[in-house]
Length: 299
Image (cartoon, helix red, strand yellow):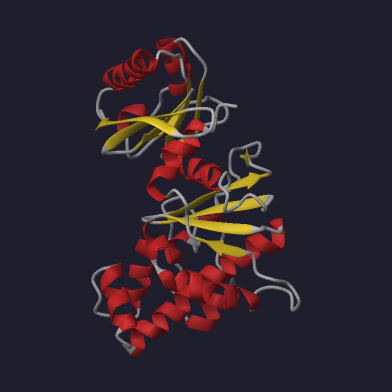
């Protein structure tokens, strides 16, 4: 039996899966964000309850936002502050008396969506998260690839090209990562809204901007064309570097049908003349992919 945890700043979702990846149990509780020992106790309680309910001893995979320092193994987490500075994996192994695999939640999404019937024929799948930020994960032959420094999939922090800056007279936004001009600052939900505000559109939210676009507002149409071109540039760059077979979208912006309609043609402008754009796919498991992917971390 596999147990997956999707840990966010508001809730913890724990689900159990049988050998056929059928979900047989799901529990949700509020996340203890301020007290580390309380957090460990919460996870232990969920695991103990699942073991007793299912008469088993499940393997454990955990997906959560933030990063794990590859040298010290300490967590850096904004959403769950009590985790920062702690060696969470080591402490959970001791608390739960079994191996624990921990991974970034974006990578868990990618691993889940690369393990579906939709992607069965695709060897190289890139999970693209477009939400408050822009993250992702690279999966090769249904195995998550992280890299020596754990940076594989951090496409949101590649810099936009000078060609885009010149074409649209874009501002160079600073990024919280310490770099400047990161794709995340333009293609995330916050990025799209920042572009809208920079070019003086009246929209106060992404849904509001989309409504104006769908009603034919000229400035909103210009902004969406700009947004699609910037995103297409990023995806085409990944395809040129990795020869990606399929991109699977997640996050709030993945619900925009315009992405699936407009991106393939827009990507052609950034690829070699006879190259075919990678498949652009909507998620099969959506919001449930994080916990499912976490369960898949343990082989």
